[in-house]
Length: 316
Image (tube, rainbow, N blue to C red; front, side):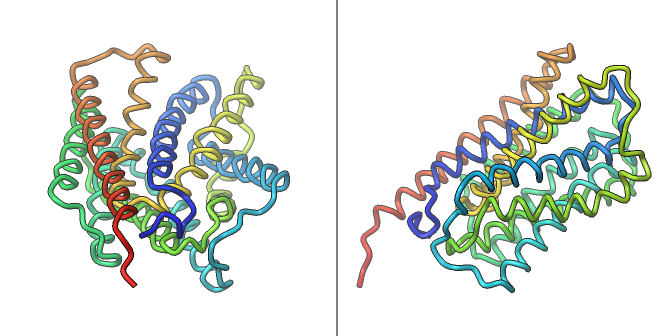
């Protein structure tokens, strides 16, 4: 696919995804600080995260001219794209939180993030003919191995079938969201900021009933700190990160996207050691090295492939 068609070079799309993955990882550390100083539940935090991100993106959109797409997008296609993306995001987050509750954080993380690249690679091959190649397969295997070492290395995990099933549902929803973004972004007729806005709107509506059950306003002795933490979560790992994610995912191969986004647990692990005082273990170092190496290798391969396509002469 020509980069000129979508208006965003693949190299810049890769950079967007790397920044988004790293930003997503900071949400876990911020959420831990929220949980330590209040009784806010995960559904309430997710709701305020998406609703706050929606408000911030709306404010930014009002201050700038609407993005122009290379090809005007038909209304029916736009409704299908935004609806599928928003529902995918809602199921992805909700099923993941349910999996964490059912089988624990470690297993839920490994199953969700581990199954994601496999499902996405299979879906991209069947629907768009995207091939990973030997180097890509090696990178995916290396990244998944690093994820397993990083998250499960500390031991003490409990595997429950219902929790695993929920994690697989979460992975499937994440895969649908990623594949839809790539599919509709191939011809350049999409607006990444508009996609993010509608995704947040639909997700906020889906999460609202669960948030009402938990209680929208948490009890805390430090309300100012909670507000700033929630604002940070809404601004950086949500509004900024998802806007970059949807823009990058439209121009980068789906399987590459899924592997790069595995930077999230790496970022979270680093912050847990630096800010939250968690112990630096051999598993943390080994898993981080494996994942960073795989991400770097796959990103270089993607960039080289895009450069080769640009340099090929067009025959008429």
